[in-house]
Length: 119
Image (cartoon, rainbow, N blue to C red; front, top):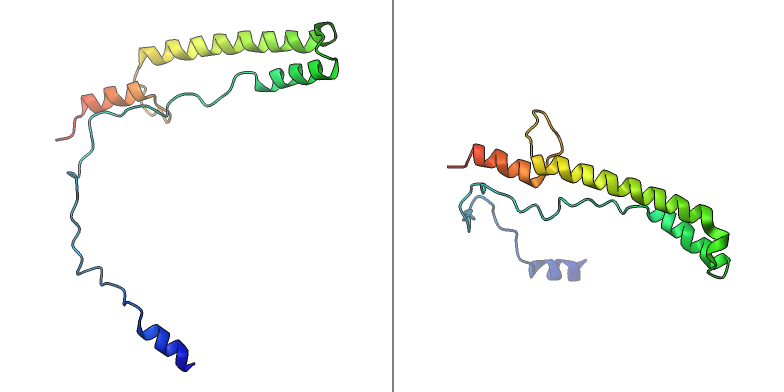
């Protein structure tokens, strides 16, 4: 017990938060734009179908004749994925502001921030 007290005596006491002033490095205001780096879709198109095709090809010594059903499933999935991608790209290029929207693209947010800039 005595050695524990000796060890605790050498520890530094915590600082009082009221005595430490907050000094900001940058001004405390928002920018009028965002970069939009992370607004890309995270969905990988037809990943399940391509794995089914590859596993079927592996089972059948890479002969296409045995895996026609899986290949056609993959091709139809890929066509619908491309159509959905083009539709989403067309909608995002318009950058219309819809009231009450929960998910907005970077272009829409930049348009909104340009409308109401920070002073």
